[in-house]
Image (cartoon, rainbow, N blue to C red; front, side):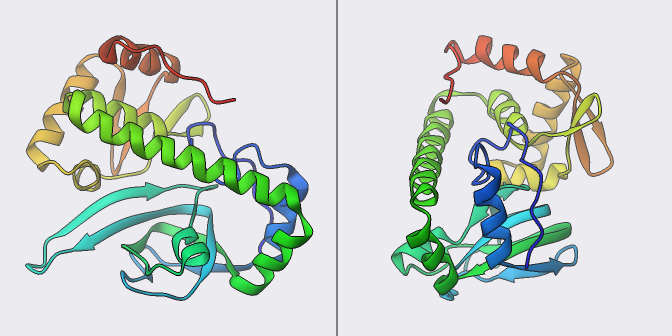
Amino acid sequence: MARPMKTPPEAALGGLLRDMPPDLQADLARIGALVRYRPGQLIHQRGDRKPGLSIVVSGAVLFSATDAEGVRVATTRMNPGDSFGEFTLFAGLPRTHDATAIGETEINQITRAPFFALLDRRPALRDHLLKHLTRNLALAVGWLDDERRLPLRTRLAKRLLEFAAPDEDTHVVNITQHELAETLGVSRVALGQAVAFLRGEELIETGYGAIIVRDIEALSGWIAAETGLEPLTVE
């Protein structure tokens, strides 16, 4: 049985456990198995079809794909409270990316049969999943819009805001600049220039393998000014 986890930070916008009632979180922990992964260990490969729901309990997971020429491109990162495996679980689709542990990582692995049994017993879980998947679709549409409209420095700021996890008075994103460049699909040089700009605006600081957001509200306000759009609130 996986142990229940604390409610994830609001920055994890698409997190499955966001706003999930504690009793539902406990049910998911009860029917799952806690699996630990070493830094850099492969969790699953692109093309795998074993169905199941995975919830990040601690650490983080990087999703990437490697082309025929051996070039690896990272697409996203998932933090505590985020989930993956829904495509395979609900639609029988193969895994679309390799999933690799970032740092020491724990995953609540829930196999298909107990998950659907719980879904039948708890209609509230079905409702929550529908809201969660719809929110993630909205996020994906937003990312596509960002790619078309926004400069790299603004896209970087928005992604840091999504990734930031609370740590005392600051918010720390435990990710290297190389991984950030892969996630945003840009060169390391271009990413470095965007990081330097945000640092010059005193919105972030850089550390070893991490970026520190000093003031979430200040970063949010800067993003709103750069995009020219009022931020949307999620009910």
